[in-house]
Length: 89
Image 1 (cartoon, rainbow, N blue to C red):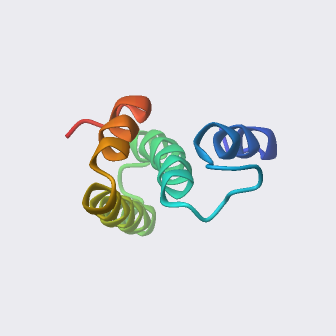
Image 2 (cartoon, helix red, strand yellow):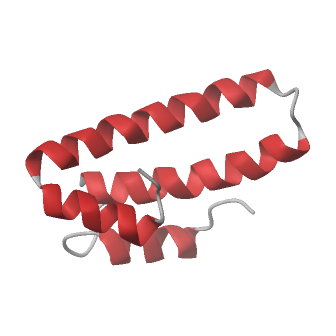
């Protein structure tokens, strides 16, 4: 299922610090987590799609860097994000 405009607005509303906040690390992490979940489903069906695998790994590393940034600036927000997004760490 692709990321619809309604789902994107819902994630922005849930994780944004204010209305229309799309640039904060929390929103970016939430959107990346959603896309990673979709790509993981795709990779389960198409395990030889190496181009998509590369994109998936790139998204995961980008999310990891953003999480590291949030952890260094606001450790409590980091723990809250992990809990809300069900990211194991």
